[in-house]
Image (cartoon, rainbow, N blue to C red; front, side, top):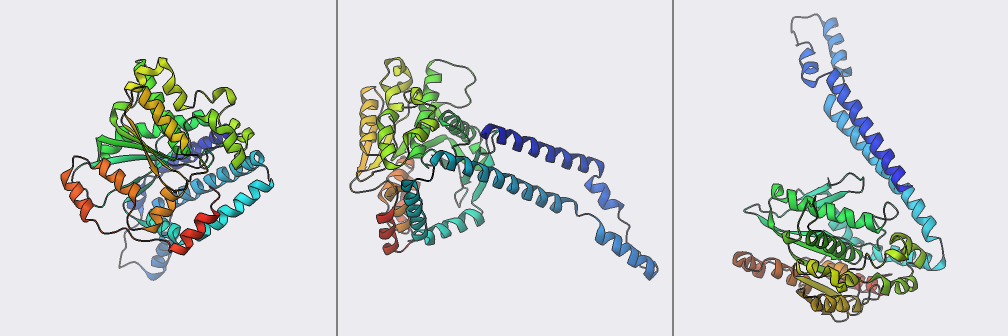
Length: 403
């Protein structure tokens, strides 16, 4: 269903583009502008009124077409999201567990809404945000760029793959192989185009959170395997990634199936996302690292740091512990940073919304700016980060979080 919808949207979009192009060819903007009569102060009043009426009814060429395209694009995306939502509900069912989790999610979002609204204002109105940049041929292939305030010199780049239980923004538009391919194409776009936006192509860092940590690690390892086999048609290289950061990720799907089922991501749904039980090994980075045939690929990997909270019940911290151990035994440079008492969302949501000192953020920035004395000095003098949500709301949200 997803592929048919994508095909339909691409066809409708291309047809609309052809219609606009034909219209512009038939009535060039410049010629239409010059064909309007020039005002003559000596003409009689009746003719002047006729001319004014003609000008008032003349088409406004560019803004109306642009606005029409925007409305058409929004309508198509709304249709796509609506149809996918119904498809997703068919997969999920309407059981008691899902109803209670959806209710908890709604309350959780409402409690954090003061922070979300401030972030949304920045996202939609900041001149430093470039939204919905197309990087692939699927409607879902969009990325956002967040640019620094100053543009003096090339800046380090972080490619961040967000989480969402492999569902938000992905399923049922695509399954796990599509997700890994999308991530790889996004990384490729950044590696090959970020210099145009002021980024340093020699200082690119890859990071993922939760499901995004799993997907991005799959993309990184898959790319390393391709390069170790000297496969052709490679659009980006593992050597372009200075370091990989995985936050609260799961890297052995076989060990997580039953855990996710108990947490509400039912086995049947999860296996549908992962393309069946037979594909779990293929998309488990931990197991692929342990495979002796991938030893050369592992040697190509950049330094890897995994972060995890010890009170994470969505994906237990053992997932990161075991993966780091496997990486180290295979000869990769890997380390683990555990945060005592932190949950799945503490490190990613509550702590940043709290403002002030953020241990994870400071550690990441110190790693990214390592060797840049001037940047490190600026970091040390930076003012404390602004609090976005009152503490009482953060504590309530933590207690009812469905994650």
